[in-house]
Length: 147
Image (cartoon, rainbow, N blue to C red; front, side):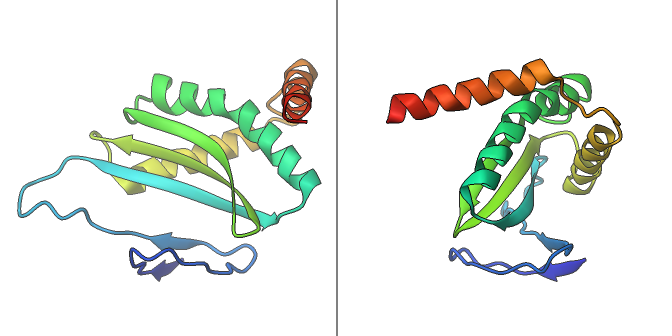
């Protein structure tokens, strides 16, 4: 894993396929101990196109509740747990983030990775057709309202 030092200036980088980069920054506390930590796992999923964007938005709608249920409610990892679709600089991505005053970022990352692995092991997929159809209908309805 490559370590990247990031400045506060908004930057754009092309990340090669199947690469893992870690960006970390300490929150200066003036010598005081700060028990808070946070992690945002970003998954870059390719260049923007409408079909993949729509598919990813549906997936993130489906996965949001299981992310919260497992990582926040069951494991009680942090007071903020969420997942979201993100599209910036013509790239598609997904994020899962946790803010915690109980666990460090390395542990939080391991639990995010375990969650993703557990979802991918279900041979029939983690979602049923009814859930998928509901999300699709919601997205189509949203498009009709915007038109």
